[in-house]
Length: 149
Image (tube, rainbow, N blue to C red; front, top):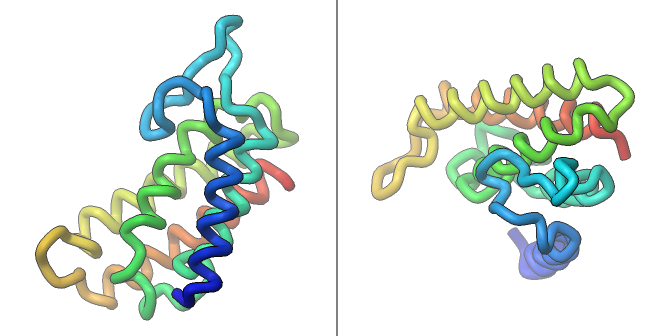
């Protein structure tokens, strides 16, 4: 990624993280609840986070070319799913959001099972990992659409 693009993405992510500050537990688990039982991650903050993730090269470049460089992207995508599920009642089509979240989870699981980014080893084959990442890209686009802008 170019220095400018990395800096721009970092700035967008920083804004999203600032919006998420005070959410309680990290987003690697189910979204935490506020004192009244409502999810503390708001729909606008979720939209901001999804918009920043969608700008990543791993979301926009050809999957079979970029997948070895996408470990952080995959974690970000995986981490946003619980927050999206927590906001399902707030969107126009909760069913579409749930379907997209399920598709993201499935794509992340396949990407992991195919050892596309193993630690300390070469990445998995493009013949498996390219389609896995392409599926994740498509599922992420569906999730963004389901959450709305």
